Length: 136
Image (cartoon, rainbow, N blue to C red):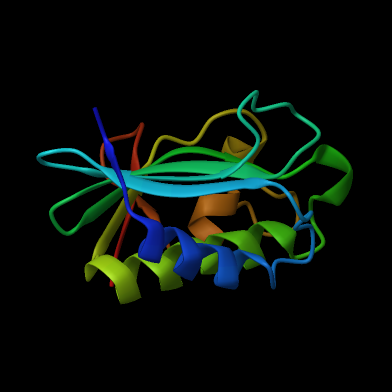
């Protein structure tokens, strides 16, 4: 069973409270097992109308498992703001130097103005046609 990490959870809560769409009472937690750390922000149901993310940190790599910004809040800087919380928390707390995810849905669609998807705008590059990666 994963072990809760109260100090890391409070660090994340302090960072996420500055996220413009943060709602008091949203779930925030960090835990670990023998080999990985797990990080969660948002709601347990992953409803489309709430901002949320789930991360798995293994070694120096953060795998972004889920990431959502409500559709009505997109293209307003909120995705960048929430990603910045992830990057800052992971680099400061776990010395993470590599971030990976598999774009899907809206985050995979190129912006008509520059042809880049959300993750490319965050500094990620496609590594195999499916996954994107950012190395700091």
